Image (tube, rainbow, N blue to C red; front, side):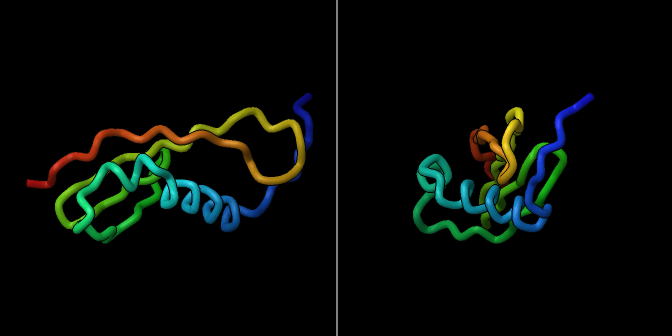
Length: 84
C-alpha cells in the first residue's frame, strides 16, 4: 500500500515549479540579456521556455514524497537551441 501524502493543488504546484525555473541562475545565464521570454509551455517532462530567438527545455524531476506539502523536485536545464 502506498502512503497517503497531502499535496497542494496542481495550480499551486505549477506556481512553485515556475518560480523555481524563472529565478534559477542557469536560466538567467543561458540567454543573452536582450532576450525576452515570450512563451512558457508545460509539457510531459517539464516546461519549454521560448524567447524570440531561442528555446530551452527544463525538466521537472519529482522526488519521493514522504511528508505533506509541496512536492519536492529538482530541475534539469538543457542547452538553449537557436530558432534560426
